Image (cartoon, rainbow, N blue to C red; front, side, top):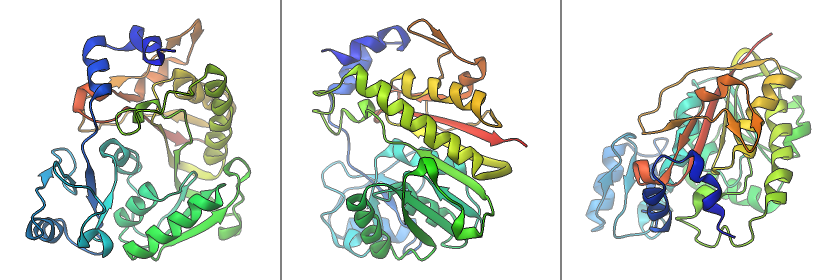
Length: 302
């Protein structure tokens, strides 16, 4: 099945979109500012003979055109973390403050958890939740390598997450980067669509709706929830937002990102969504030479 063909009605340049999806994704690293400054990490990589190409929109990320993220000593010492470029968007949109209570609802293996911790200067607490023990093991290993001390790991289904770590006190912010069909990772994982089915998309959207709804419930009034996926499927993106707007006390809010993007779609396959889903951002591979991504920002209401 040609999965990408189903998105031709919502893509502005089908030929460029398809061509970008077939190109390998550049290797990218994010500097772990808990351990090293951006300049110090850059010098360390260059001293090792590794070419670095700064990412224009994110001052703490480098593309490594001729190397791999984990094949150097700055990586082993926790100065850098291999992270896909668009994967760094949600934590920047959430914009946590040092000292806050933050929930990462689908955290493992830790890319965004570690980014949140760095944005918070390793202060406050990030509760990192996942239902997969193997992936949680990777998260713990990554947190140790990166020198993170403000992360508390919980093994549970995020759809029924409790607030026990804070005696019932709600979070200031929550990041909901949910498990998805991963269509947007095709440049990194060319085989990702081989076993794609519409039944899987429909099934995983139910999980996504449950996690996002719980995150809104667990976040204080006036707090921020960011929802993101690495898929193009409206069933996993705008449809999930539409569900949350009906089921939970929240509203979608405008936000800016320094990347070329397109607004969320309000119609798909005969379904119509709340007009405010246009406030979400769709990032396509051909616009910024990245993977595909979706991001939305919500404010919790009373």
